[in-house]
Image 1 (cartoon, rainbow, N blue to C red):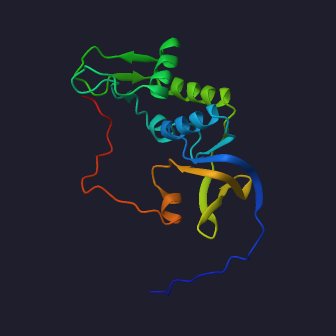
Image 2 (cartoon, rainbow, N blue to C red; image 1 turned 180 degrees about the vertical axis):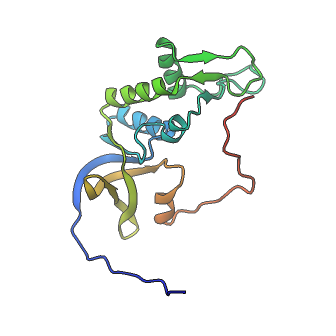
Length: 196
């Protein structure tokens, strides 16, 4: 068996392509909703998404259900905000069906293609810049302070600078790379959509 071989990549200058107030890594609804809230507070925001659309894994995987907004006893609404706002937007374009069964956890059935469109509109309305097909590669640290990230896409390897970062990637690579403490549940939820 051959020994593993290595090559040394030559050092190079990386172009800084953007400098913003907040960079969100991951364009899921979680990431986009954080970006929208920040934009509503007046921050310049950019979202880095490795897929070709917002809510990438869910929409690309045709996960077309969302949880209910009420508590288990159906007495108090416990989820509102941008989740409710997006459901209302989808309802206006006829892209959501609501189950009448109060015990059903997956209360909303969505048209995922319309969800992509509404999330794009939401980002555009708030001036959020979107980098699709873009991978987070490495952190840029100044001592123990995260100053920026290295990204890669068809424009090549670039640097993004920001005052704040949110890792909403689902993988937590940025959080791991800067040394944040993490944990993993012993029981991992199976990768299937909720149906009941």
